[in-house]
Image 1 (tube, rainbow, N blue to C red):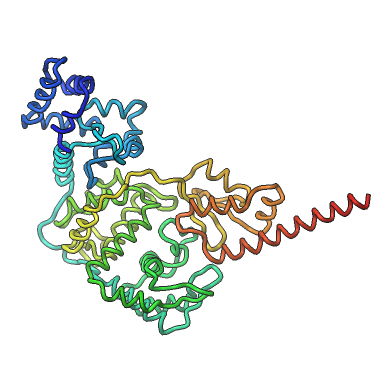
Image 2 (tube, rainbow, N blue to C red; image 1 turned 45 degrees about the horizontal axis):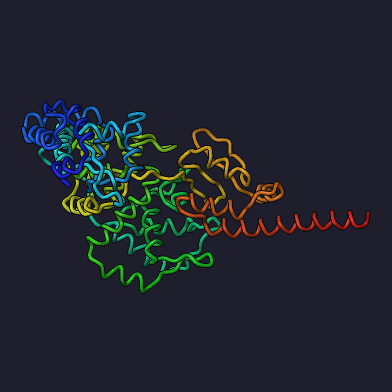
Length: 467
């Protein structure tokens, strides 16, 4: 819907408040005069520029995200979430400001509308400002790293390796280190196998594998190409044949979509970052100034600072996915320049065209690790109170982590807590589900604890009858 349609469906009181907010002179009791006066003001380039600058200044945090969306209509809850920083009554004030309107169809899924021409004007305002902030260079840097489609080559190398070897999994559900070392020798892009103590939030196997391999392996399992069964990894040949028949662009698009879905738990505004990068990309851009532009959408995540998230979780992974390449002035210096590839621009454009509810607030989430640790990704007292009966807290700095063991399960059952309801809650809030080895042990511990409780009850009853 465009501005004239939105104004036409608005009530007289709403139009009066909009005209007052925009300082438009009109006959306040004539809907036609108010509507025409607002439209005439909007069609004046100078007045329109003033309106846009005012909206983008007063509603900056919300407007930045609105202009990056590939749609114009929003759910009431997500718009209320966007306007949270502006305090109580922000939604009502936004509806009076002239850039947000109520959809004329009350049954629609997205009842709040930003007119297309208003969104486009604000979008152009921000893009112009973002491009002015980012430093550029005309010539290509002397040292460039471009992985192109190497991730697809290594995906097939992983599948070929599993097909040709008896790949068994540890009790935590990870491949043994000798397999990882052999894979690194086969891959076009090698990674260090030395991992930090805390690894969670970036995929189901991030606890055991380096970033790129974890992404490839998780994707292969999600696609059904690799199947974990009875402590082994096997290849589903039919799924792999279907994968090989796909076009390169389609494969990379699926990988990019998987990356966004996997990393979004830790980086809620990842989709916004990628949309922004597409709008300023194409040239060689200074990485530091590009980070400053993207910074409002980049958050710290436990052991990763905001800069770590930007450098390792976004820039490095976009290079791995063939979306971008990086450059430096000397082989020894760290990356200083960033450029989206032509293929990357195409992939990001396809994602931009997909209208998804990226702004919907995530429910509180946690990660269940194969070592029986539960890490709370989105801290929430209610979530932690709910999981408390069957876990014990792990003392640690900066990470809210818990451990579930046989004695904590037995304790929770003895205290009368419902384990099945607890497990269903964990499954609902776990980003990557419950690992198979944890599921197996939980079933064993619960059966054992319930047996002991039943035996104790029988002893009590026999004692009472004897008495």
